[in-house]
Length: 186
Image (cartoon, rainbow, N blue to C red; front, side):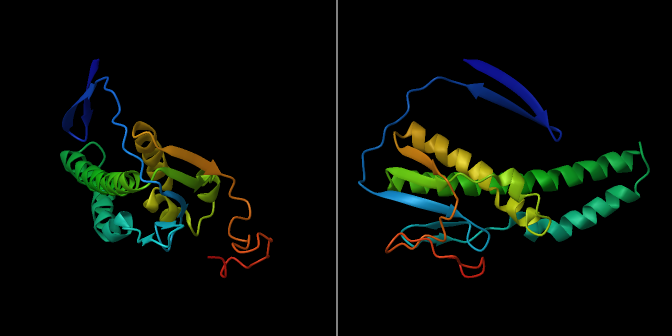
């Protein structure tokens, strides 16, 4: 339908928008609940846990060095422009790695399950906590959940958001709310 030409970090991209009919997958008869977290990227109701890749944390040292080089360059100089491009490329690589990981996990889940129930988290509010903000942003929960929702809807799967209040305090056997400390909740 349309074409957009975008320049990002000294690279040119052509983005094509086309209309296509979604491929409806056959039913598997399996539904799943997903909980995002920091110790495990996602935990499913079937007990599967996927470890967080921590792309930003692993690239943090190299980023620190290249950002320090950038800050030492004189404003407006050719060296500063070159250093800025290096920092931008490092951030772009981290972003692309995270996006690829999210697409792969979402694709695998959509192929395997008919429906998804996830917590309706207010990620913006959770990032206000300065102790957890970097880890939450590194995990990229919001991006993953939006990708999962889009893939599920295009494949004819259902996707529902559940109120997160007391989901980890309700007993799975009897349904009674049992107060638990944050360190005990699983």
